[in-house]
Amino acid sequence: MFPTVREVLELDPVRNGAPRVVAGERGLDQAVRWVHSSEVPDIATLLRGGELILITGIGLPPEDAGLRRFITDLADVGACGLAVEMGRRYSQRLPAVMVRTAEELGFPLVELHRGTPFVLITQAVHGMIVDAQLAELRATAELHQRFTDLSVEGAAPAEVVAQTAALAGAPVVLENLSRQVLAYDAAGGSAELLLANWESHSRAVQPPGRTGHDAEAGWLVTVVGARGQDWGRLLIRRQVARDRDITLIERAAATLALVRLTQRDDLERQSQSALLAALLAHTVPVGDVVVRAKALGVHLERRHLIGVVIRACPADVAARALRDTSLAGLAGALDDGNTGVLLTLRTAEEEPDALRRLAARVRALADGDVVVAAGEGVATPKEARRSLLEASQVAMSVRHTASSPEEVLRVADVGLPGLLHMLRDEPRLQTFVEQELGPLLAYDVRHPREQLLGVLRSYLECGRNKSAAAEHSHLSRPAFYERLARISRVLGADLDSVQVCLSLHVALLALDALRD
Image 1 (spheres, rainbow, N blue to C red):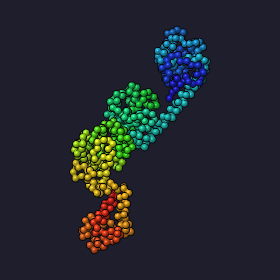
Image 2: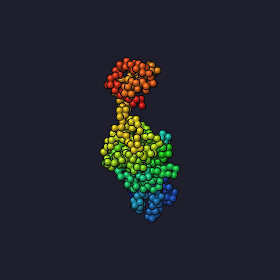
Image 3: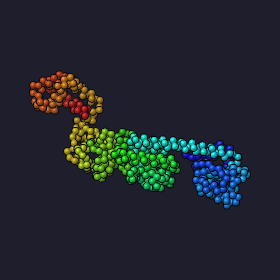
Image 4: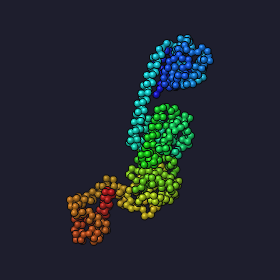
């Protein structure tokens, strides 16, 4: 927010004074908070720090000890530099004791070799400071508004972290108290490098206080929590922390705390849900998913992976079932309202027992019947999407629940109705249904009392046994036969043909799948 001593020396009123830095160059990047002009020897007692002092030297003590004390006192109170106009007290150069003392302290000491009204320097610098303060106020107001909007919109933690990284222009990491990464943004850098050995790296970051900067580690850190309960830390990579950085990280942490209070799912579960969604939708490279999962404590590489989808089951139940059975994996809500699990096992031989234990525990915890479906086990994270998709298709396709608490449904359990359900969005299947049943469906619309489609269904489901079908339809046999003949005319089909009836039966099952 404030100009540095180096920037002040570049201003025209200062350059007109022919400035020459004679000592303390390593302090030229200090911020100038104010410019003060005075010839009072003990001016240090009036300062608060950050002032650039302008003098002619007429009030300085004559002896070396006094000059040394004058420079030392200015440095001790935090003044950022001293500029002396030459010609009034000192003609060619400043006393060596002043130069030597300033150099030892890294305190900028400047000679002005041409006369320049100090008021012009003061006005120029103060104008910079006021403009910078106004800009900072506007930036702070915008920052607060952005995070207020995120809070009102109920933004996900990942979105809050991404916004923080964009405002900081630096990597940002949100972790829980176990040093597992809940969300991160590498700010255009390498996620793998950012999160490599994260737990060990994070434990070495020890800032002072709830919000503090660990200069050695290069991170600005604040604790995240609400109502007296801390649950994580937010970190911004910073070699030097400014006031605005502190405002940014504390406002972001407050937004994250509010998000946790207003959302039912915990942040770890949201993070795992996001990873499963990323796998299924291909929105994030698989390598990044592996890195992020590892940061959450779930290893996907060199593991046997099985996609599991649980119908009619909350994500927290699946997560608890994983913990209770000591199984490792990702668990989270899917877009279709179901719960997804990506099990990670050391060997393929563990698969049958792991799935049985998981299914039994889920059903013990769930309120009501649930369907637990699994895809084919795979050996690499790149194949995990296929396993999850297969599990999802099975879960949505099966028409029956498990016969035992441990049963897990697989593709082989789907059957023809399930297969048609999987294909229900396929235009060719929809065209087939219209070709086979379209005329009959249109007839039933025009004659709602007859409903010939139900008669055809009874006939086919009773194995083409007309007597049994008539009884099932609650019709006399003559009435049933007459309606069956009408169906044959409407469809232009021979209902005594096995092949024709098979085609019609498949079309009926497909129609059921389309109407689900």
